[in-house]
Image (cartoon, rainbow, N blue to C red; front, side):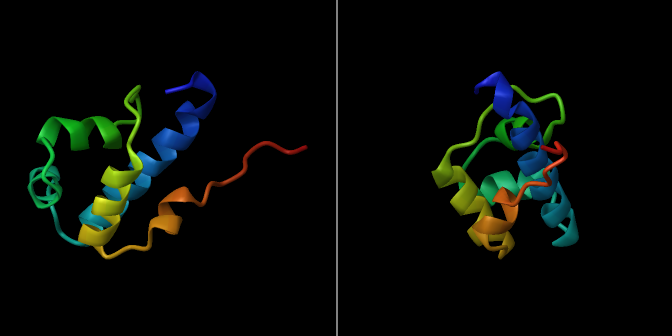
Length: 81
């Protein structure tokens, strides 16, 4: 992952954690549903992550949580130009 995108990956992870908890799922349950390891889900959701997420994995998570994928990719622009 490029360091310039670290905050965006962190935001995606936080959104995944939010919707997962909203659906009453554990990280283990989400991992099982998308066919990935619990440690991958934990890394994706971690605020200190240096782990990127593939589009396939994001789409699997989107389908499992019943959340449109674009919601994970809408970023808050904290920089003022």
